[in-house]
Image 1 (cartoon, rainbow, N blue to C red):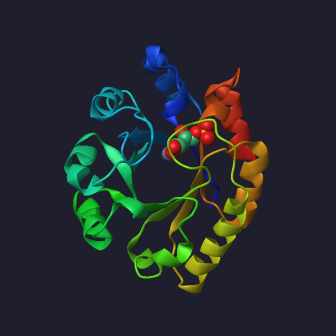
Image 2 (image 1 turned 90 degrees about the vertical axis):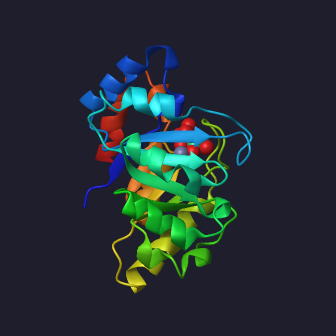
Length: 216
Ligand code: DX5
Ligand code: ZN
């Protein structure tokens, strides 16, 4: 399977959101990644449901929603109503993760668990069989434009092995500091989906940059 590219809207020009979404529609991007931050789970606040609702009717690609919030289980219904295809919740934010994953699927979405850079993949041993995707953070969540954490390449390879050993088809998505150089190494390590924020949106030609990320 060819890898997927999910540009992160966090790095877009919010004054011209419609233009940015149209650019995504016209590009080879597979998904649009949406970063929701609450200022509690992460030291930053981004955007919430009004932005998802505004984007939904014009977006022609699946929405990949990454919740960097405490108690994400409270918002399963709202995320589904906003049109999300994939709902990512942080392992570190969920006390009853198994129940939350069940609720996400019941609401008709794909379910993914996100791991912070310090969280080992061994935490997933008893939940991975229920997941559609694992999202590995390759920066500490909260901000776009941060430096890629090298260890993520090795972590991706070990997660791939864990998935293979169990005969699963769980996708691996990696988020943070992705560009053509780090992206290539992540793909070699077994990543299936790459999120790219600043690398895409600060490029002079985002459509071409997405194409290059697809052709890696
Ligand atoms: C970080 C977010 C990322 C971010 C990636 O907290 O989860 O999705 O937008 O941005 P870049 O690609 O600039 O590191
Ligand atoms: Zn993200």
